[in-house]
Amino acid sequence: MEDLSRFVLDYVKKEGAVYAGIATIETLAGGPPSTDLTYVLPGARSAISFALPLDQDCIEPFLSKRNRRSHERDNLKTNALSGGISLHLAKYLEQKGIASMPLCANEVYRTDTEYGMLEMKPDISLRYLAVASGVGHFGLSGNVITKGYGAAIILGGVITTAELKPTPPLLSQDNYCDSCRLCMASCASGMMSPEEKTTVTMGGVKYTYSRRRSYLRCEYVCGGFTGLHPSGKWSTWSPGRFTIPDDESEFRDLLIESIKAYEKWPDMEGGHYHLMMGRPLYLTCGNCSLICHPEKGVRKKRYKMLTESGVVVQKPDGSLEALSPEGARDYFSSLDEETRTRYGVK
Image 1: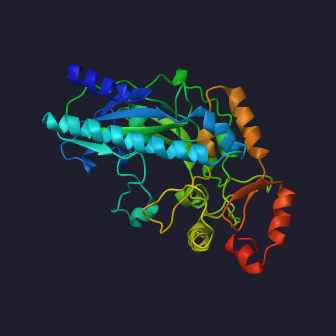
Image 2: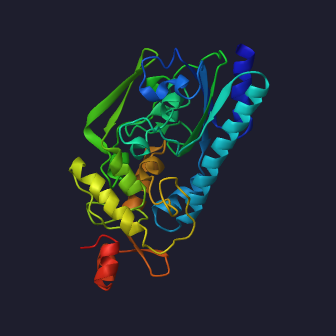
Image 3: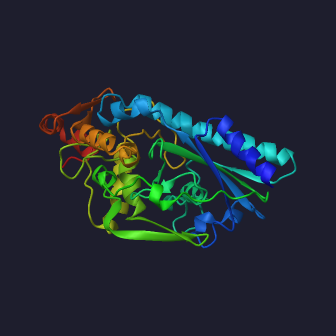
């Protein structure tokens, strides 16, 4: 068991992982449904968890609205790398006679929930595997944060029937999160509750982070359908201007309305096909994870960049441009009513 445990950790690190760990059914016991390893592999006993770093050089140009595409390209490539590493390790173990299942870094959803894939609940939560195995801590946002790269990481994992030796969770006193709340301040959707907390218990250890409000908030804004911060002073990379309400019950209808409008926007550069969309989605947000750097000074600098980056509009050729709040209002005023409606401008 110890030899195989050392091997799988070394395997993912040689492929580019900066942190790796092992969780077991014992160290995940008591966790949410998405920690049930047998959901994807009957007889599963262990999970290998790992983290890949995003390119730090692409983050500040993205937040400051100087370059969207470089971070999108890096993010998509790193997600694909995560899936590739997971697949190769799982196949390696299978050919050694050990049943294993690779996990995708994103976009695999449960279908046995009330609203099926629309709820976007993962088959297995890579966040929980990472924290239970010592890959990282939970930040206030609920994102996994690491001492070297903050929350700017992509997670990966492999489920296996092998009896691997678990790695312990990190010590709480080593968590750099000081509840600065810049993650919350950088979220235009209001996804994280400023008052309420969520506590989960895995393997007898309690973990706490900010309660996440309706996931439709994140689908609406991080999906790129709208993006203007309630202050009106800055936006994500989305040119959408649909209202971001406080009432959770309003989101489903607004999401449907904005998706229909989104289908009529001109194509942008880049993008990625999502199984629930008929056209590409574009990376326009992720601010809460990109802001969260281990050094507080860097967090403050990045937040300042974001909030001074302006408001994005889309030109008829599909290109995006960041303008001042006043300039963006003037631009939308110059458009005909049908075009304004397409972007949610009343």
